[in-house]
Amino acid sequence: MEFIEWARKNPRATKLGITGSKYSDYKALALWQVEQREKVQFTYIAFKGSGEVLSAILGGHINMYGSTVDASTIPYVKKGDLRLLAYLGINKVPGYEGFPSMQELYGIEFPDLLAIIGPQGLPDYVVRKLEGAFARAVKDPEFIEAMNRMYMPIIYMDKDTLLKYVQETFLRTAKIYEKVKAEEAKEKK
Image 1: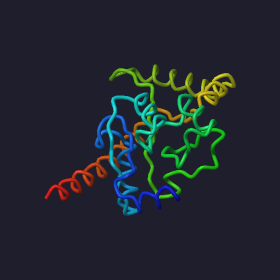
Image 2 (image 1 turned 90 degrees about the vertical axis):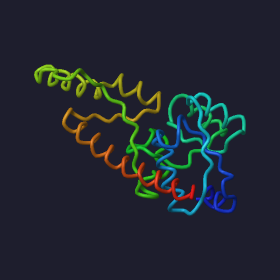
Image 3 (image 1 turned 45 degrees about the horizontal axis):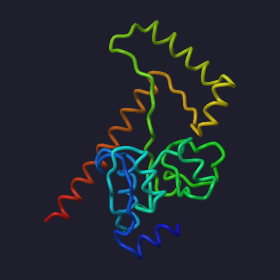
Image 4 (image 1 turned 30 degrees about the horizontal axis):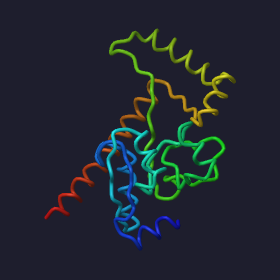
């Protein structure tokens, strides 16, 4: 990838805009893994929110943005102001399937989890009823069309599948977080 070659020749010149800290932004944790594997160094710049990061990259203040690909960023991609380099999630954005995923390139997967959550102790019959309603809703043509307009992939998981997926994801993330902390401690010595 040409961006990685540029980053290799220009250590720390990659100014990566993230929301929050390097330790709380899963996109930063994924890109830290790319740094380790490719032997490059990025400079992480924290912003309060994605709107600030988008403004910073469009204004030329940073040169990489770990973002979601959605209705707020796709117009800039279509216009040529932003360029997709790779996907981080499991599913690719409709219309942009030709771009590689981080899973394909590096074996890195960090999904952006959006879920509907209820209170602890919700009766099973209520959970089953809600699962059925959501399972039908994600197949509705109007819902699919709306999600496609927002460039959002549709991923449905029942309660048990989602719980297992979240637990596995958090375990993987915790291990990466520990590696980042250890690497930073080593750099401080």
